[in-house]
Structures are given as structure tokens and as C-alpha cells.
Length: 178
Image 1 (cartoon, rainbow, N blue to C red):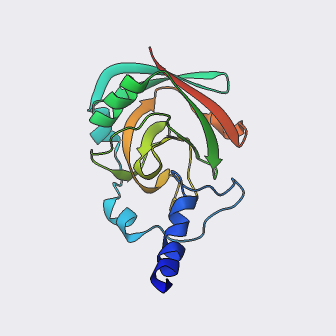
Image 2 (image 1 turned 180 degrees about the vertical axis):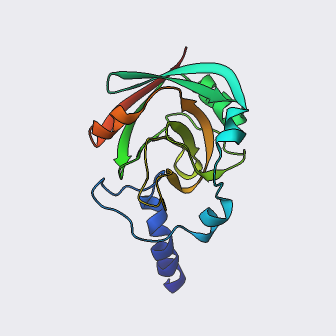
Image 3 (image 1 turned 135 degrees about the vertical axis):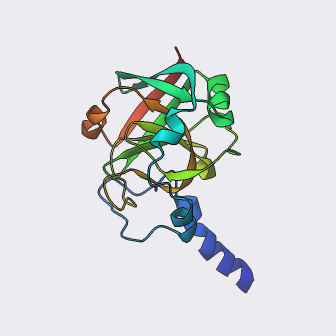
């Protein structure tokens, strides 16, 4: 029984996390990222992912504002295409991310990173969540968006995403193939 209680205490924080956290946007985490996150960091993933674009485009609509997303060429992005169209209710995490559960399971076997570019979209495997980055997150150590734990890049919005900064703490996201 004692082992069960200890295990439950240790696993409880996992149940509360998403791409970043279920914490509200005004609750900032002051904790350092996990060692696993630090080890998997890429200082700049732009060159890696830009060269691996699939040539396919998705239309991402967030509370009525429409963006085009260039999809990357990986198994997770391909599975996202197969799952489209999708509708997601997303929550804001800090000043730089929206995340929400994808209604269909997306495989997460690809290369995982924790540093993303502004406008980039990632899959957070632990929550099967769609994450849109538009600024630093509570675990960022500068201005670059950082996922709470490593995820898989799915694509990148090709236009300015600064409008996301003024949106509500909860938004509706639809994603469909162009």
C-alpha cells in the first residue's frame, strides 16, 4: 500500500501536464526543465525542419483567424493529415503556446525536440496534443518557445502569428488540408 501511495504521488504531476502545463496563463512555472528536456534541446531547429517540408499545406483556423501551415515530412505529420479535418479546444500556456488534445491518436516515433520556432506546430506525445508556439513558454530560458518535454515538429505557420498573443485563454482550432 505504501508503494502505491508513493507511486501515485510521483505520477500525479504527469496527469496535470499537457504540452506545457494545465496551469493558467498567469501561473508561471519557476522550475527548471527536466534533465531529459535539457539533453534533447536543439539550439536552433529551423534549418533541420525547413529542409524537410512535405510540400503539403494545411489551413489552421484559430477562433476565426486563418493561417496556412507548411507540413513537415515525417510520420506524425502524415498521420495528422490522415486525421484531418480536426477540431481542437486549446488552452493557453503562458505567453507563447496554445495546446489541445488531438481527437485521433498520432504516432510519436520520430525525432523529438523541445525548442521550437515561433509559428511552429508540434505534437506533444504524452498528451497527444497539438501545440502552436507564438512566444516564450513558462519553461523557456529566453525568447525561443520551449515545450515542457520533447515533442515532434509537425509544421510551421507561414505568416505572422502575433495575433495569437491577444486571443483568449481558451480557443477553438480547426485544421484541414488545403
